[in-house]
Amino acid sequence: MNEEITTGEFEVLTGLTPKALRLYGERGILSPTRVDPATAYRAYDRAQVRHGISLDLLRRARVPVAELAGAEDFDFEARRQTVAMERLMEDFHLDVAERIAAFDPDDLVAHHDLVPPLDWIGVVIDLGVPGDLEGRLEMFSGLAVDVPAIDRAFAEALADVGAPPSDMVWTAVPDATRGGSGRMLIARPAPMPLDPRTHDAIRDRVLSRTGREVIPTVGTLPRRLEITFSAAQPGSVGPVDEAALGYLHLLAFEHHRQQHGLTAIQATSRQVVRGGSLLDGTAPVSVFDAFPPVRMRPPVTDA
Image (cartoon, rainbow, N blue to C red; front, side, top):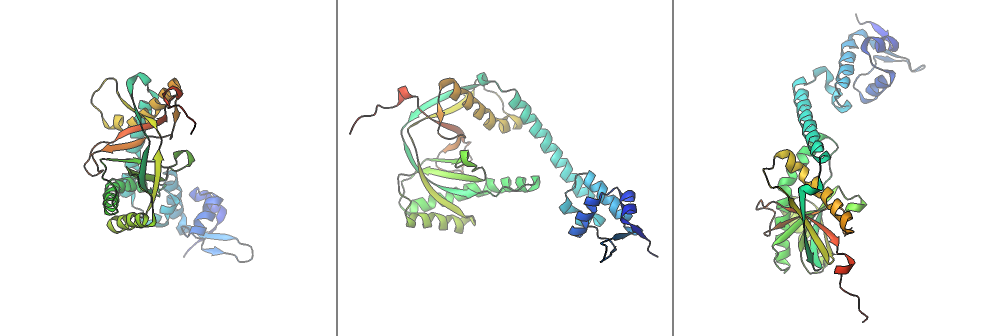
């Protein structure tokens, strides 16, 4: 015969708080056996105690509430694998953070190129970055395949509308200073307007080839200094160094910019690939764009 116990007794036996019990009741994770319609008094069955204890311990193990619905048949091995992966990622990011903390500007050498204005045409991808680790890993794995495929379809569409061929392509975070981190830009040099025919040709080609929605866009890079960095002491690069490199280049650029009084055109770098395609596996080069110092700018003359 089932034995009914009060909410207070159930809390003492399971370790669950009143707030947790209300939440689990609302989510259908652990429902009381009886709720008095007049007083809202809740009662539980003593047979539910084991389930309640399991829920409390799983939450102490940081299992998300969304995964507790199946607590009575919980996959402990799968959770252990997830925890092990999270721990590996934590250790990896700690190693990268340690590498960043040891940053020394003298470890990198800056290189400058003064280049003329450049018109470009590109496509913006909405990344839709997930909040959970597994979702982010899956998204970035997918991007490794999707981005080159999008670029190939983009290049084909440009060729169809008569754009001149280009041996350079770059990716960047658009509007980085205005919170555009959830998007990616793929761009190519192209001195052409984004008329409706071109817009639709690019959008439709990318969608039909990759299934991804993109937003065609155009812009102009002004006359600028293109600044890149190389290691002062070349050597082997491990996974941690490779992961830290983008951050180290950013720190080096900030140091260099302040040292020489430069103004950045965009806060982050462009990842430039020369060779015409993102498909050939050529490693991108981080290129930072800055306005040239006043002494390097051409004089302004009256018309």
